[in-house]
Length: 286
Image 1: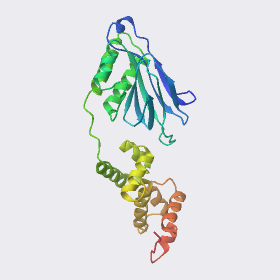
Image 2: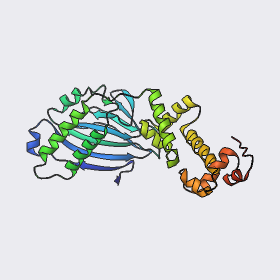
Image 3: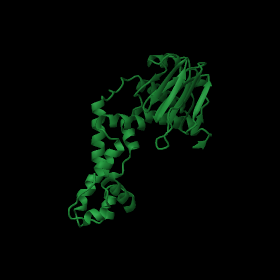
Image 4: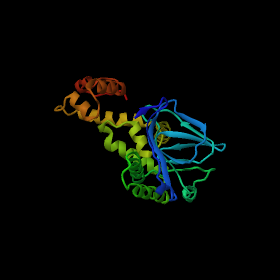
């Protein structure tokens, strides 16, 4: 990816031929990015339609006096000659804003966009980015960046398929109890594999800070604290097994080295793993 100052991005420009312009829809440019902390675009206008899909993170869009925050899985549309701006909502270096965009035009473009329920005054959809749609976007980008002889028909077909995918009913949004249950199951299954809160946020499609806030409200501890609790309780059990060294236990619980594990154990229990193993009473400060 090229460094553009406020983002890292791959951008590909496409020039439709005369045959494509006889049709109702043709692409103009596409790309994907990883935003930096200072990422901001506009205020500006463009000459075409442009779909932007949020692959990760959170973006804020301002258009026609309305401001909306969109999270992973959402998409928004920029309309021709409509002033807009958008920027990274809350920069997280561990989970930065990433987007994929596709600009297009044609006599059918406006009609196709509005068939999706997208208008100038409500230029976005939530929970639209499925695996199938992501693959379709990648396929369009590959066709646009490496044009092939007689590939224009395939590209037009892929564009219309993209609109068909977007027109499908929204997937059901998880209720609180469902995503909380999913979080717990994920952590309890994979806590020993070095997973992070960022991994859990990606699972739910939430921003990391929002996830932590809602999780703590429900369970009285943050996701990070719950992961530590699971690892430490398992560490206590494993220390009873004299066939395992403390280094082997640390690696079995997803820690990168003995020092990191020992520090976490001492912080949680008030004594080192080796001290615990040699203490007959096993009295721990929790």
